[in-house]
Image 1 (tube, rainbow, N blue to C red):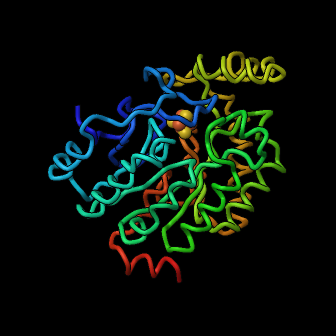
Image 2 (cartoon, protein in one colour):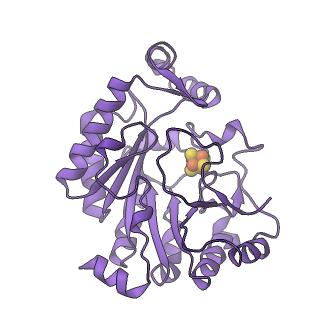
Length: 300
Ligand code: SF4
């Protein structure tokens, strides 16, 4: 099996992403998010380990792929897991992507990405930082081993200051946890202040194991979430979705706030692409086609 593969191997009918490749230097992810879906198909999901002979295989494959197609790093593991600070595998990966003039998007919850600004700012690269809540207490429970929200905001600020196009993901929005109007509008305002140019929002799509982890950790929410997902919601593909009227309400709320602050907006796998005000839902449109000249014009 190759290390670069097509994104969305399950061809979900809800996915509106443009054609792109997916690339993960690690298998598994150390952030241990309660809502994570990789637990349904990766063994030892929260134990991140480097892929064998990764850089050698990557070099071989970079020679052969269509390098005009963007590469998304990563979808089944954060590229900045804990061991990355020692191993530097993601750093070497983006160095290689730059060398091959590949266009790539780095999606992460970690401020460790700022260590690699020196490479990113001279690559055809964009970044997307996920922040689900500004509440440290909730974040610590939901994403126990991921950096604090304030560190992620700082990462957006630093990346933007260096001319690296930066978007944010509010993903997932979980009813009763991070879904109230004030929390969402405060979060969007802070993202805009930090320098994000685009926001993609997504509601929580329940899978049995992640639903169990969430409701065991937040027992007070069990009844309402069960009602919303199992009774009123619908099964789409492998996941349970919230009822459409609630998804629409939450996504519209974020869109209104995002556009109030002059950013573009998209939702992820909601069936609501009519609300999108950006070229792509996943922010791959922010990846420059050239290096320095595009970066400069982005800053103007
Ligand atoms: S960062 Fe993503 S892949 Fe890693 S544990 Fe959290 S949800 Fe899963």
